[in-house]
Image 1: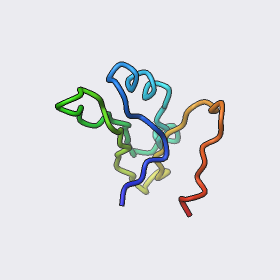
Image 2: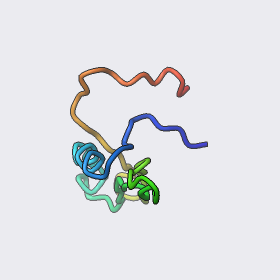
Image 3: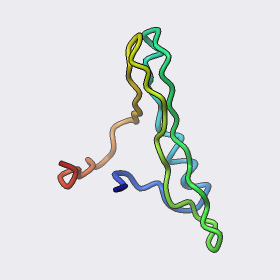
Length: 84
């Protein structure tokens, strides 16, 4: 089941700004071959708003084996207490 942990939804220009704050961190920094990306979801056909973003990638365990995403610190911490 998919559950959002960060709000990417809204008008396309707002979401593009939010997503640009994130950086992918893959094992290529250590010579690995994993790759990932954060992609905008489909725009709602009625409102034009984007409703989500998804993190996808291929993690290759040879040569490091990790994919991730990071951003600068938030003004308010994310409440992840429901994600145990």
